Image 1: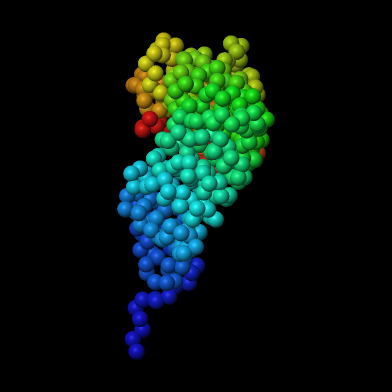
Image 2: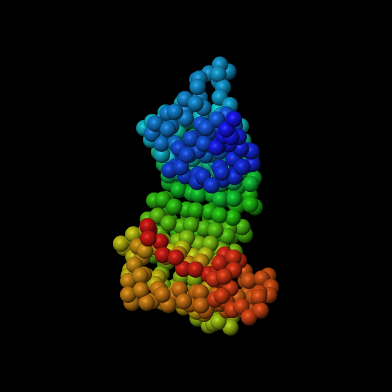
Length: 419
């Protein structure tokens, strides 16, 4: 009898190793499906990965709904696959979905669902009841919802989502029912870490957030404020200052009501700020409020900022003579006022690559890496404080190029081509 030239059985451990090499992006989803179709053993090993975070577009969405929700009445026929779904991303669903289908999907996947990104058109009031039962939810993104929502319904739902860590509110308008709910305290999830505000964040809702800052959990360290057409400096500053004790990460962009230079003092408002993403339309040449007498000998008093991302919101009314520029940022770093800065990201739309044919931007990168970061490494300052000794005779340049920890911790300047 001839010996087979192929193996008809592989250990589960080996199949899991093979599965780990398959990317989880949309282009390779068919590879996962093919993996599961080999035989029963391969199916048992790979089906959880296939349904954990499905990429749903077009006809794939229809097939997914038919598989996860084979019947409108749950007690008639249930799908065991629904309990495998951890990420339900409906951001690409526009015309294919219905509001009742979204509610059913939430109802079927509630035992396992950890991340939900709501669709633009097929999320409405009938989805709140199902959403409130997804008690394992960690991330809730409503930023694409186009239908006006009731913050009263949102508030009631959030009370049930005790594991929620990341919340993005919708850009659409909001309804405030006159039921006296705003006489009560706003209750945020106790483990909330990131809050993204967008749309019509004003009036009663904004007033309640500023009036009751103690309702925010101590775990909240990150806030994004974007796409808020009516929110201005007078509303944003007190909100941020109320959270100054915990905020370390802030994003501010697409705020047309904010004037040039109004956010110059954000490093003073938020003394613990480490990561800042901001449109240069809201700052000017005085950004940072650096005291004139501050020099490199005062490095110990440097601001806590470690990562700075500069974007453009395309505000044509800004005065170009007062615009925040490369020399302004160079001075903040050179004087060590931003002596803890490690990661600098510049949007290509700012046009900084055109200054001096790129020489000024190159000089800024050399200052950040070859001077500031090298100095911090040599003297073991800030994030290098606990580094300890390195290989004898190894200099900074060799360390960042040849060691894993060096490549991970080194400073860098990046230009965003798509912004």
